[in-house]
Image (spheres, rainbow, N blue to C red):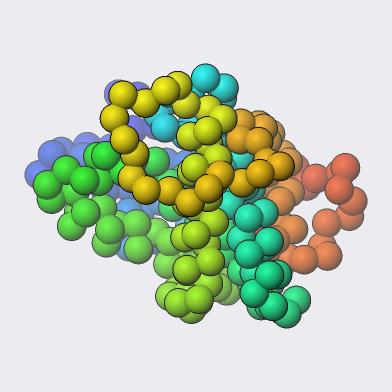
Length: 224
């Protein structure tokens, strides 16, 4: 058996128990995830190694890089909407973590989600995992509607920017997208340590010693 595969469970219909092992050695329970199972090291490691669009891009682009782009666009939109610093900090954290559940369930691309029955299976799973992540960093489990709208709009703008910069000419039309972000280029790769520092800084503003000295956590070390 692969060392990263869960043990076989005779009570499971497929013979595999619904938990996964993270890079730090945590057994992440997909049916009942808790905040204690959420580790920034695991999120940063996984998202900095997973590729957008299943890797079908002309330049490498990780989910971590996408998360940074969505954060930056969200902050720009929020500032234009007149958000104060307290709410801006929380929106920034919610934006950088908007795909954090993919560290535990993978990036299930939209065309797969469009298959019959997939949304009914994946949405509750995604919600459970994202709720545990939000509780870990004291974000509301259900974000305010205006925050969700801002982050969703930023996500679509990031998608349009990635389509412009990373994809070959498409043989079929995509869903309607807003204009790509001018002055921003998709595909800038962020390292694991740099993304970990960004997560830590967003969750605990002012706690980093210096921008060029990101915290390097050993597997399993609690980051709170």
